[in-house]
Image (cartoon, rainbow, N blue to C red; front, side):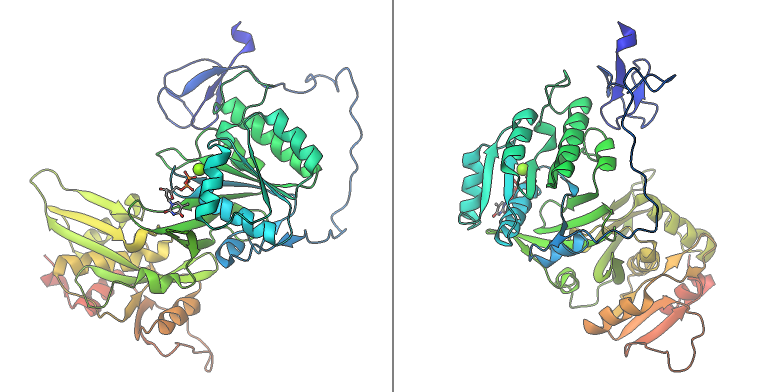
Length: 463
Ligand code: TYD
Ligand code: MG
């Protein structure tokens, strides 16, 4: 009967009262499926037939102890977790298939095991033999980690109840199935139920859970976004195909800063930490090239320098291309529009390609000025000095706006041997607080001024 059914979008998890071809919530086509609804608790009118238990209330003044944390010893991972793994927390690790999630978690499991946690690794995707082979390849066979190849949630929970580990790794949540709901593994209600049962069970028994989740081609966690709300921490494992660098990014973290990143390199012996990512992202850069600019960025709490490359070429009539890797396409369109209308630097009739080298993805608006510099440098075929770092946000009016953590960006640039920086104009400082880190600074107030002083393009010569 229609009344007993829900219509749920498999992309975003939104529920609808009737089927339709397109989900109103996320706009995806053909993603709505019939599913049995979850129980909704006691009736709306009354407390229900059975009275509940009275919940204990506390005030805000009592200070709970900070939750105990365990370090893995992999600094890149511990920092992303906000300073180690919190006991009884729930984590979700998302990423494309084949990016290295299972490798990362097996290595992490081994480290946590050696640091005294009792760890169970549950694999639903691979056989136990496959995981053992990987462990052999990674040289982890002697680590105190126990393994189970199982997808039945009831059996897993029973095992956890008997074994009482400190940490359980579920690879992946999409393969788990609970017999409480009649839906195929990987469907919205299965993933939601399995994640909910696992996290609540684990929390009551003081077990930390790390779940692996697959990502759709649009880059969001496949299945319901609701899992993201259930867990304490959502990490994404990203990387461009063809690059050996992998970036673990905290998307949400209840116990530490979000937007923190950890950089790894995929080697023949698993994932290795990259301690100095800036040096790595800039390693192939030694001569000044038109279209190449160094951006002094901040990822989480850490400054990271990376190279932004632009290429501009004549377009086929009627089909100009704008292609971006590692940055936001909408933001590129905005910078091009500001350059055109405020600085008379036009890219009409030109194809524009923008790339962040090394497979890094930048989300900071502070990269605007570096992108603008790369675009003009490519258009004018004029290289900026090799040892010059750039940052600053551009507003629609063409003003260059100040950004956070200027000092940290400058310090990192100085540490890597840069001698010049182009940055937004800073407020007047008191004498003695000037710490330019030994760099030659050029402060910019607006984009037309930048185009003029850096590229020597007076308004008349820009056409
Ligand atoms: P995997 O962890 O299985 O990815 P996921 O669980 O995210 O699907 O990683 C698979 C890839 O990693 C595979 O293409 C091979 C590569 N790899 C290495 O390069 N070196 C290694 O030591 C290991 C274990 C994997
Ligand atoms: Mg895997």
